[in-house]
Length: 422
Image 1: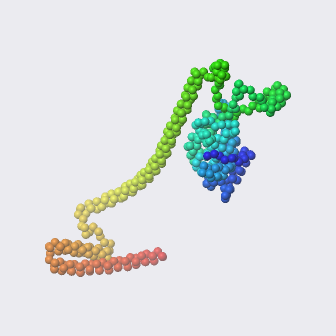
Image 2: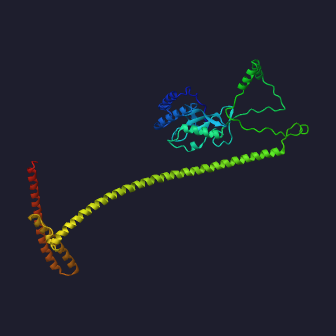
Image 3: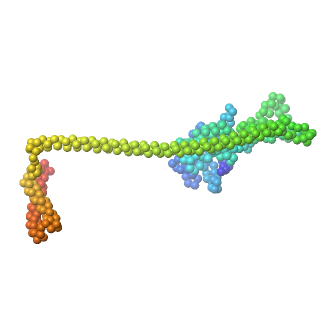
């Protein structure tokens, strides 16, 4: 993925201008609206304002981004430089931070943006040849705690450990060939010499730009050479020096390969640890939920226990009271006298109901007897006819008694209502 040409940078880096710019572009609606979710636009604005305050060289703006499938979309980006310290000297690394459509739920896309006189270091652990940056902070991006300020600080930290850019060295002229200076250089030197010795030295120093990025290490040519007459003017290295240099290069390659393998192993281990951490957190939530349910169940059981203890006390008191009554009666209680009706109608209802149920039991016993052949069938029919007639009279009497009781109850309620003036 290659970033397209950039739009002109923001002219004013101050925080007020940045806030006004972001409020304007994020509030747009319709076809010109930026493709971010409405519920996270305020967080995007906060991230970019904080980044601009912490790193004034990184300013937000909008630009067109082209995806691998050819789609073009207008997105926000932070364009500028992040500082890094390398060998106790501070350098500025040009970068572009693209806020993709799914930001901030997913990590942004970061590019190293080298100038014309810079090149990307080969086989860099965090920057690929196309300039895409991949550091652990981006790989472990967590919404909503991750932010652009911490990302920029991590970029500064990792770039300081291993700079991703180097200044290109112009090839040194061959010692066997002389190059005449161009007219423009002669004119410049003549102008410098006319200003005097001191001014010439200062101007010469100013004319040589200091590289923003440390250059690559270059090895000087071998001092060992054969006679030019026998070698035809060709310089040859000493075989021992060639062997040493090849051995050193091989060791460096092996070391780099081992470092890459170790880094991949550690990243796999970290991924496994992150997965285990996620599983442990899920189990922690399940245990907390289960513990809460057990505590709620314990409270419910304690309430039920209190209710049971209270009912037990009531029953024990009732038993003590009735045992005393039973002792006064001598231990013999007549079943017919265990329950006493409150009035004559209730006693008549009790007698009718008892007779009805008793006749029902007798008829059931007769049915069993005739089935077993204990009594003849004609005798069974006579007894059932007599018992059924008697049962009918008991049930009719109970029905009349119930009606009288209902009338008495209604009259009693009316009397009470009139008594209380209702």
